[in-house]
Amino acid sequence: MLLTIALVCPTSAIVAQRTSAWMDVGGATVQQPGSVSRAAGTVGGGVQQRRARFTLGVDGAVTLADDSVAASQGVARALFAPSARWSTAVDVSATSIGVTWPGRSGNRSVLLRQEFGTNHVRIGGAVGSGRTSRYALESGGAVQQLSVTAMSRLHQFSGSLSAQRGTTDDWQLMEAAGIVLRRPAPSYEIRDLQATLSWNGSRTALSASRTWRAGVGASSGIARGYALSATWTISGAVTFIAQSGRQLADPLRGVPQATYAGAGVRWQMQRAPRRPAADAWLRPIPGAELQLLRPTDGGNGDVSATGTKTTTAVAVIAVVAPSDALVEISTSAQDWTPQRLTRQGDVFVARIPLPSGTHRIAVRVNGGAWRAPRGLAPVLDDFGGMTGVIVVP
Image (cartoon, rainbow, N blue to C red; front, side, top):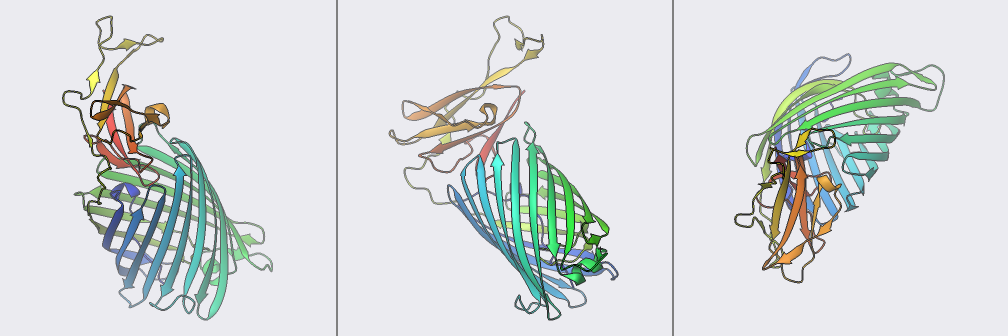
C-alpha cells in the first residue's frame, strides 16, 4: 500500500484573498517497513473561499509510484471563526488506493477541531472517526486529541505540544508498524505525544516535529516519527517546498507508516478580489509615516524603571471610508483589543504608540475582514485574515 504524498505548505505561503487557488507538482521517495524504496510523483491543487467569519476549501492530490501503485486523496474543509478568541473547523477526507472509489480500497474520515485562546497561547481539542477498506476487509479507527500552541511575541517562532489517543481494529496497519496485541482485544490502542517548533520569516518558513508513540492497554510496542519541512517563497505566486520525515501509521485515515523525502513547487493563482465602493483602501497620510518620539532628557530613548533605555514610536494609520462607517484597529501590542478610529477630514486616523520590537497591526471596516494597512508587509494571521508587520528599532 502506498501512502498519499501531499506537499505540506504553511498558511503563510498562501496569500489571503477572498478566493485562492493553487496547484502543486512534486516528487518523493517512499519506503514502508519491510518494503523497498519507491519513487513517486504527485500532482495536486485546491481552492479556498474566505468570508469575514467563514472559510471553505477543497484540495486533493494524486500520487503515482514507479511500480504503478497509485493513490489519491481529497479533503474538504470548513472553518468558522467568529472572533479571534475561538474557532471551529471540520475536515472531511477520502483516500483511495489504485485510484478506485473509497470503500473498495480506500478510506473516508471526518475530523472536528475546536480552539480557544489568545494571540499568544491557544488550547485546542479534536475528535475524529474513519473507516478503511483494504483487501476486502473493513476496519475503523478513532482519535481524540488535546493540543497547546504558544507563539512568541515576535510572531516568528511558534511551538505546540499535543497528546493524542487512537484506537483501531486495523490489524494490518498496526502489525506492520510494530504495534501488537499482548492478549485478545477488540481493538488496538495507542498514545501519541508530538512536539512541533516552527519559524516563519517574510519569505522562508521552517518546521520540525517529533512524535513518540506507545501501545497501551492490550497493545504493546513503540514507534518514533519526525517531520522536517522548509519553504521558500520565490515570488508572490511561486513557493518551493522541501520535506522529509518518518510518518507513523494513521489510525484515522488508514495511512501506513513510511519514511519519505521529497520536494515540489506550489503555484498560486492570484486574482485580486472585487471590492464594493464602500470598501476601504488603506493608505498612509502624506508626511505621517513612523515617527520616533524624542525623550525630554535629550537622550536616545526613554528611561525605564530599571534604568534601561527604550525607544517608543508612533504608527500613524489612515483609512479611507464613508463618513458613517465603523472603522476599527487591532494590534498585538494591545493584545488584539479592537479600538474605534476617529475621523479627521476625509480619513479615519489612528495613532498607536509602540515599544521597540516587532508588532502586527490590522484594520477592518463595518465589521468586515481584518486587513493589513497599506504600506506594511502583509502576513497571514491564525484565522485566515491579514495583518501588517512593523518593526520599531
